[in-house]
Length: 115
Length: 116
Image (tube, rainbow over all chains, first blue to last red; front, side, top):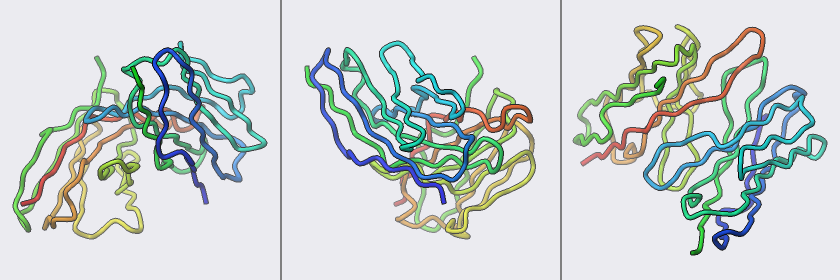
């Protein structure tokens, strides 16, 4: 069974500092995608970053980058130069590449940005 | 802009009174999903359509039904809402591509359901 674990229910970071959110997953698949989604309070869930498991290079999107460790089944999100607008619930998600259509979500990490 | 649209954004219904939530997409995605999300929790998948094929999650109550009359539209019907069904309902879409498999999932803004 596929499971996604986010062990940090809440995190906080000082504005302009760097924070890392953790995610681990369990799968027997070799090909899959991993995602980080952001959901601000009362607002839409949006994609932050995506990683394809067959790519060794870590994905980066501006201030957001991931540390993808395939052997360890770890997929952490680093937010650099944190801004007030980064405050949100962050969900890690996984989907298999070739079979099934489900996305599996972690329980989320609530990020607070302190001015 | 291509997007996922949900109507209404807020829905108030009475205990036991049927309600329908709607979702439309302009992304031409072949997979559409309905999730239930309660406060500060992860979205819980209720069911999804892959083209016309309906896939129900094992723990989705019979009270929840869905229809997908065409590629663009998908509806969530709650036949007899209970107080425990008050939640945010998220519609999402994705594309299954023969070459690349399942692609990124895109979400609508959600419909917040209140049951009185």
